[in-house]
View 1: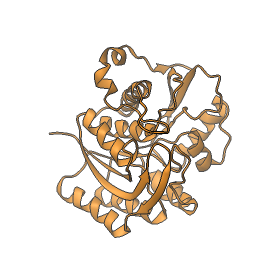
View 2: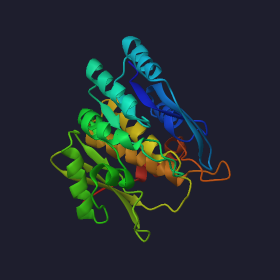
View 3: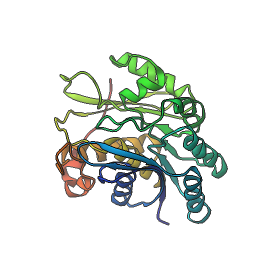
Length: 279
């Protein structure tokens, strides 16, 4: 049976992030991708020109239609827009007893556009995070969730534990938004409730990073759907996203996108890549 993954997220008309990035990632990792669209965005490489939320009933019906017929081995969330749509996802997670739920707490686009209403934070923290198998915030998102400083490694570890204590089964804090522009490596912190694991890769100087968070979390969901243990699912997803960033490309007048097929095109580099390290 082909593993199946449902993504619940916003549509990116520019094709680099959101639903489009998720589906490309699923295809590359040999899982069948399905979608429930929460909002339509008008955007390109320059920025987001408009956000048009889908009627909540439509969001709920998309999820129901997929789950009642096809089902899903894993589910991931991206842009959920507001409290109402977050709570729809929570209700469906309970109804269908999702055992592999990847929550990417999308709040702001790469270009700086706000994609989550401020009043939705309580629903995210109190309702959705406790249902998550893993949450995958970047540093700015983790700051919003925890209201804690995240400058040093120790501060980040404390914030990771704080998010774990909110009810998630595990936490992945991505290091790509570090304010330390002299760092030679990007370090992601993964906590499974017992141990910290560190995934470190060389910093890539590029502006072509549109869709990295969506792609990373989609890869984790795909790996979980295929039955990989959680830590291995994260490690392999890190390899996937790193090589996609390394070979990102320019498309328009602004920052370009990651290259979702890079893991396939540059297999030798992928096979040689080591990401896990002690810290």
